[in-house]
Length: 199
Image (tube, rainbow, N blue to C red; front, side, top):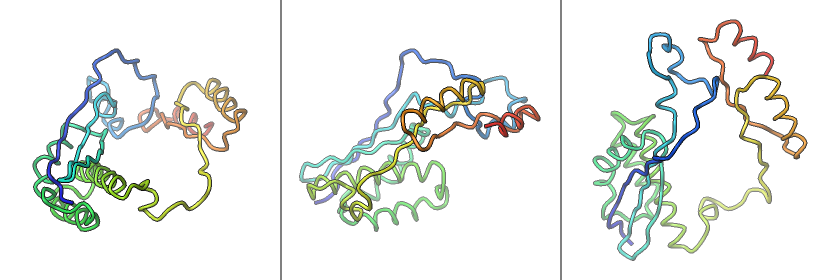
């Protein structure tokens, strides 16, 4: 089995969106927010998505994806990773990962280079699962426990009374853990720090 083709495409959401609530989450742009005239969350919204399809010479297609900077990620895959992969055996997955990582090391040890490698890696594992007719978790070593605990992941940095009500609702539903988006950063000053201590 050899990799025959790699296709990348960006899918865009063009419908209506709901404005982000104040204190949605803290991001690196907050530190320079006073010097900017536009919203600081622009690079952290997910209205487009990259799909990676890797086709093999025996008809299998593995699918991967990336949400961060999909257009730039597409270019990294098309220009840098695709030439390394065409004609390769997907079962050499560790070698292929190392090849991609080392070939992009000058610019990609973190950030967009790793996002691109991750999208390709997901597609390669999808091919291996389909080829072996096994779920990917089995190829990765199998189950380690019969059940996986879940947590509520809807909590946003709303006013504290709303946050308390929402947290109680999840606790009453049986959740043992919750994920809170941390919405107060350096630009919120003493008031933000006090809010953080309350959460």
